[in-house]
Image (cartoon, rainbow, N blue to C red):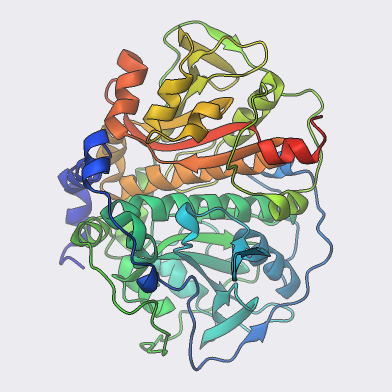
Length: 516
């Protein structure tokens, strides 16, 4: 970590240089191709060698309110109670193992939230106050055996409150969830660009978590403003190989007592792989986007951005959502969620696309934006097969589509997404672009984290929304950064490509439903 994190956070040339250095171009992708060392692939689970497992309760049958309502919730009333059973549901539907698939001779665990390359770099921790059936403490969540492992005994919510500069709701939260990333898990495949992927993966996981919190009527708020050392120390993380990315307050409880001392932790953890390859670019940007203490976190939160989405530059054609969208429960949708491997040559219903975009962009309960529906990312689309909509390039304008130009850009969509046929097959491909200059000016290097995480979270909502329909599917994709900006032309001048999600009629789901 650098000596003056607050000063480094303001030195935003580093975030810009990282983004440029990890840009995909047709040449860089072809020249940079590598053989993966499968024998050295990191283990997908963090295993503590000496800590006993505290099994979580068996889950009830999946149910709850409709997915298309909960994924859009930004301010739940918060009358639900957090206990061990509710905590189990939150952890399972955010990061649990939903099913096991046999591929050849190997069983693969399929988790609740999507992850690039199925590498699962995100780990979950919980700092709980005293719950009815769980002692106050700091715990690690193990998806492998669906259990908690206690790292510290006692109530440390006040420690997190101090680390956030007394962010609203932290001291009174029933528990605070922390999401971290083990960077090597993703960097094994994606190298220095993995820093972006870790935030995308964290965002898709948090989309599930926030939706499940809404389903349980628990207040929840996402925090990126916190002191680097204090949170990593509390969780027993070194801050380099594994580091905290985000906090989420969950529920309401009695106010936390004064912070207890937190001696250093040194738990024994199984090695991920034979050797790890360092990527200095990740360490440099992560260190330069840290906050030193609670006062710095409070100051950073005070700079929360208003919406950085520009107003329409032309006419906007309404794209109304479905009048009667599917009402499948969130937990059912998460259990069946997948990632499309082939889209059918069938048009995407316009109402379905309108519903997905509407639900995904209603705003986030997060400290890096002033208030919902403010956001840092704009959504641009290439539509190739949407009922009643001319193929072309569009910009989502919160309720409608601003047409940029019409034409058949199916092959362009495939090319922009690293020449992947899946993007060419999709009914619509959603490109997330952000004014990184404005984001970094307001939020410093840490704003780079926020832009990437927000894109992953909105993309995660699109995932969940697609699988709420009986035949639709979605998949996240990577892209040629500068080619995306070039394709959308003057309308995106000054913006940077952040993330991509493809949407369409999933070929396998369509076959299972008999083509209906």
